Length: 144
Image (cartoon, rainbow, N blue to C red):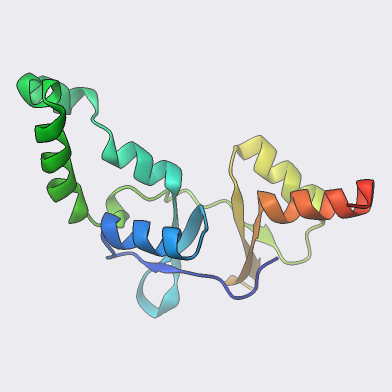
């Protein structure tokens, strides 16, 4: 578990969130609101989805999507300003601090998530990632 968790404020923009993830070389982070309350999770996957056009975008202006340069410019300016609270995952899946590594890994597999906020008495005290579990398994099972 990582105790020094990099958190992103819920009013951060897509651009700010992307910069934080890239700068810290992480693939996602908890999103916090007032009083540092956990309100969601933002991941590279969420950002990836936000930057690619959806069906409505294409129907709205088909010519725009046929021009790669126009598409880049429009998307870049439009998306930079969007708050991550609009695209973050709100359905939080967490694990209690006393949970075993096997339980945490099982929760991740079943729910198809890559990170779990670790909770003690209703407050986030850390985060465990798929990479954390993978490293531990390599150490314990393979001596690597």
